[in-house]
Length: 120
Image (cartoon, rainbow, N blue to C red; front, side, top):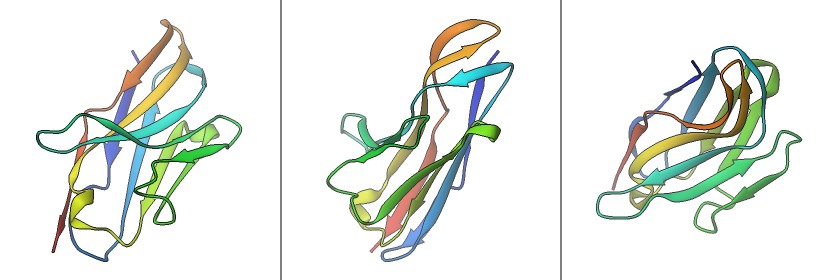
């Protein structure tokens, strides 16, 4: 069984920073892309940032220049450094791992979500 476990969410004031982590556990042979999504109340889930196994990244326009995604392939872990946070960044943040090859086959996986709340 492959699991994604997120950590690092919390409450922060506007202008502050948080760092999210997401570790994939299980008998994993490889992971293609990893990404962070978020979903605010009453809104659809949206892509925040993604990173390929080779390190290529892309970001939502709303977070460019403020958020940085990175990954450690040896640890099957992806990070999201969030700086200059705004109240509109408040959401549940979900980790996604694409094309995970494991002892159970090749599937996509989602984490359980971690709450990020930015106060004004």
